[in-house]
Length: 111
Image (cartoon, rainbow, N blue to C red):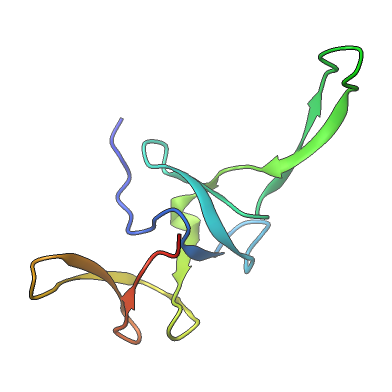
């Protein structure tokens, strides 16, 4: 299986562009580039029914995030606060940085 190409990274602020959560903004928690999916904070919430594991732990319904396809996500630029496409630029020292296509500002991932 081939990896899907994307400039998105973990901890990026993204907006969902399609689906039931269209317009919601959240931070990328986990990425699976092989499947082309990402888990976004408080987006695409699903319910899972858990069986009781022991006498002390009761059965419960857990609400958690499900993966969203990478094609449905767009980065939110911290400079212009809009959803943007991402480009790459090589600096003088030879390092590559991600660049906002609208305002031209470099994009750093906030850890």
